Amino acid sequence: MTTVQKSEIGIKAAMIDQAATDIAALISNSEAISRKTLNSAMTRAFGATSESGLWSQRDSFEMLEHATVKWLLLSKDNGPIADRVKRFTNLLDKLPTQTVRSENQVDLQQFSTPLPLAAIAWKAAAIQPEDMFLEPSAGTGLLAIDAMWIGAKLRLNEIDPLRTELLRVNFPEAEITQHDAATIHARTGDKPTVIIMNPPFARQQGHYDRNTAARHLQSALQTLAPNGRCVAIMPDNFKITGENAELFSKILNGCTLQATLRLEQGFSKHGTTVATRLLEGIAWMVRQTTLRKNSQRTTTRRGYLASG
Image 1 (spheres, rainbow, N blue to C red):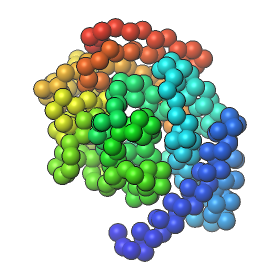
Image 2: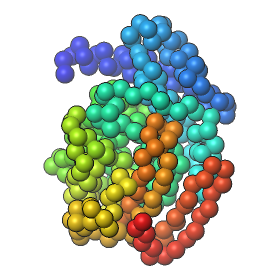
Image 3: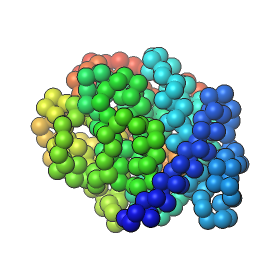
Image 4: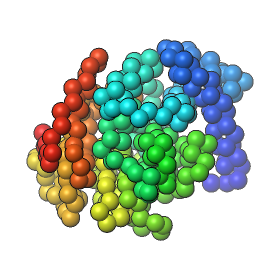
């Protein structure tokens, strides 16, 4: 990437951050946000509409995610998991569905983690202030929020240049890298004690690869410190039974899998209805939470292992 290209990305990130500041204020006031609201904020920040080519509808959705992270960083929530999930589900109901995709988004599989699912992942990870936290495919940094609230040391890796710049804005004290997460284990640095990850599911560097998520998980587990904890959001077919049973066993060899949790329609607000599976490679009291539109049901079991 040339110096000019880096400069252009930095300028665009600054304008997106300006628009995101306006949207974060609306989120703080519990106001409903529409695509029109997003477009208005982007037009003010860029001094031009999307027809100018300076920004796209996809950029406006990136800005919305950036704004959500900005709001979260200032809205620390120590409440029970059920209350968090309810709060975040209510917020999602006030945000527009991301109906527009770009080639870059599809190539890099940029489908960010929905807030309620992120809250469950945070709970599962049980992050402590002394932890070294890694998010291998950080996106806009949503999965790192709880680690930031708690005061853990952050390492955020993101291959996309624009998202990397936005991470630097919201997480100025974090170590931010721009590696291919599929080879994150080959990078130097202190080994993380906690990893939360939502890897690309089916594409790697623009090419279809049905095992992309598994390879990313394998690399993350190889970089994890001994006795570390990993919470991974994986494709629905990555499970202990079925066609991927052998791959599942190979990737998780040497790990203690505490639980899996299957979620349907979890990413619908982010433009995809694919089912997902949350894997918890940790030793703790597992909370299995079923998301519903207006209510939550939580059950607690010790030593639970579900494989649907």
